[in-house]
Length: 463
Image (tube, rainbow, N blue to C red; front, top):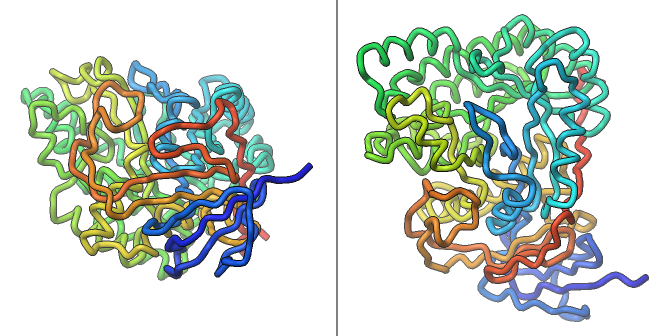
């Protein structure tokens, strides 16, 4: 059976290392050749003159079908991956919380059921441990071998049944180290939050801005200090999710220089918004955890992203309905924490980062595609423009001007946190050689997305 061939001609290819004027030949589901391919023929020729040719974006932090704070996210494996595809995202990794009394094995089974017949792009799973019993820890080898080697835990959200204490985190990290896995941590100090929130509520300080006041940077920094200590103790591999403090970023960078295996991401919203939006009448739109910070911290996060102190940018897509967000209209602590952002990430990092001189084109590709694929065990199958890699490719118009808002985005929420004029737009998206987005039209068949079996590179300790 012959495989379909596609030649993308005349575009500017961008990898994490170079920008070059070259052609890309796709055969079947993979990249066959890259270079000056004027003499090559293909069944389909695509003129990419004036466009950037990027590896498909990889989003390693999304919450699909997420049950949290008395609601469920509106992004499932169809609506969530549809929005992802329109944003140039061809691979996602979703979190699956261990259900009370349930097993880690079930965290994978649940996602296979949720994705079947729905997923438009390829997907993976981060199991989330909520009950660190010996039985749960004994399942760590199973999920690692099933291609889910990255396990997340929360250092807060005690009332929501997610909190895991430090000694249990050490036990989990040690088990993961032995099996070649990595521990992802939501780094916020639960004790400080538990003291701050009731005090503010008691003082009548219930508006959205006080969500940020209840979780000042020190809440995050204190938790990160403890994580660094765990990394020293266990020699394990640690990843701090949605970092929003410059001091925390520098603590992690110092720990890496010390030789510890620890890194961090930030998220689109910390780079685009500051805590000023929480003072607006509709400030509940931007309640997330950790909260948005001030402009000076935001500027330092951009610099850390540019110079490599931050490894990558994820969306932390947590899409709740407006009715659900309104739970917090009178009290910030009742508002489901999260911002829908699975679609805007690539467009915004180009418009606000590359166009404004904060990121190079090569660094853009690194933080949205290549680094997430490498850190989370998908490279070079994903996140790369290389011969033999999956033909996950985005054609991006660097000069397109448009207004990003609820009408122009494709996310399933009935509101948008992102309303702004943008330069640069995703035009065509290929997933494993199949054109799934074409000039604003989705061509993908529901259920075509495949599970990504991930494996981390072995460290000396895990070998």
